[in-house]
Every structure is written in C-alpha cells, then in structure tokens.
View 1: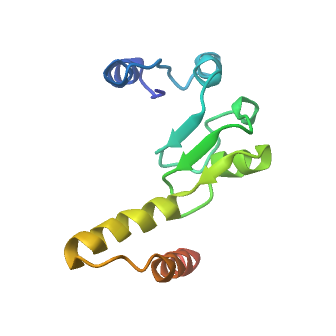
View 2: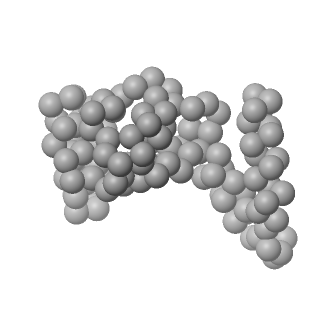
View 3: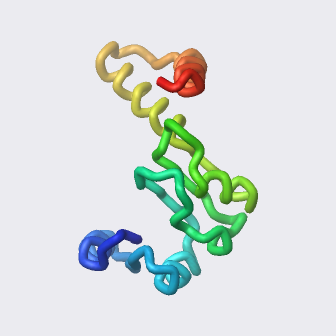
Length: 122
C-alpha cells in the first residue's frame, strides 16, 4: 500500500495485511519489488512511479478515465497488462444499469458510448 503519508499507508496496509510505503523513491523500490498488481487512484497524469519499477508481469489498473497517464503509458511500453479507467467506469455503469433495470447491461453498446464520449472530452 503506497500513500503520500506513511500513517495512512500503514493504517490501510495493516487492515489488508500487506507492506506499506510512501511515494519517496527509496521506499517505492521496496514496495514494487514483489508487486503483481498496481492500482492507481491518483488525480494526476504525471509520472509518480518511476518507469524502472514496472515489470511486464504486472497488471496495472488506472482509475483515471479522462486522460492517459504516465503510468499507463509506461506500463504499456513495459508490456504490462493495463486496465484503464474507462473500463472501470464502464463496469461500474453496467452494474448500476443492472441494479436499476434488472436487465443485463449492453456492455458492447456502453463501451462504444464511453470511449466516444471520453474522446470528445466529456
């Protein structure tokens, strides 16, 4: 668990029984050593994870759905499996659709709409 503050990282890590780190480069290296999944929910497209810490065996989930981040770009270049924020948005919407309508969500149609609207800047 990585967070800007050690206290928050520690609290979350203890509840999940995992290691914790801050964003300081010397700590990140240890946090990424055995990582298989990287989940990013930060509000920036700038590089906060050095490219050198990514390995092709990692899966990277990026919550940002409005723009490609340095993390997703770097992860793609490293050969990581990348799940971007548009897919998160899509499946959250699909679940909501199913809850409210009690019908199976039209995933393909919804995917087209999400990707089209994101390209338009909405």
